[in-house]
Image (cartoon, rainbow, N blue to C red):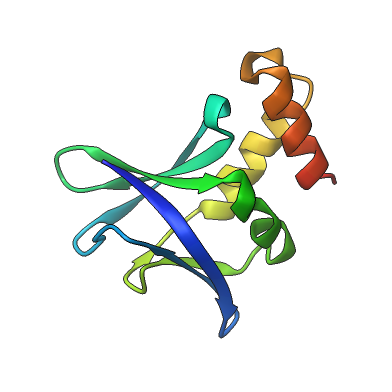
Length: 114
């Protein structure tokens, strides 16, 4: 199942992310991948049988950059553990790496310049 973050608010020193899909009972998998074709970072959640993919599309990246290191919470009930370590690793890996596609690499560079 794909879960799309539709809104992000910075409140109480945390990034509170909201999606229309139910997240109760899901556990953070502390892993992140990318969907370079659709310009998204994807955080993985575990439902006990399979992974659920939480999409952070390009339109959400500025909030991620602005509030880097804040606790990230999805739908008030799932804390996305290791979110920043995973994101930082991917961003560093994308620079100069043609495997992600030129358009995705350029978009990541523009948003997450060091």
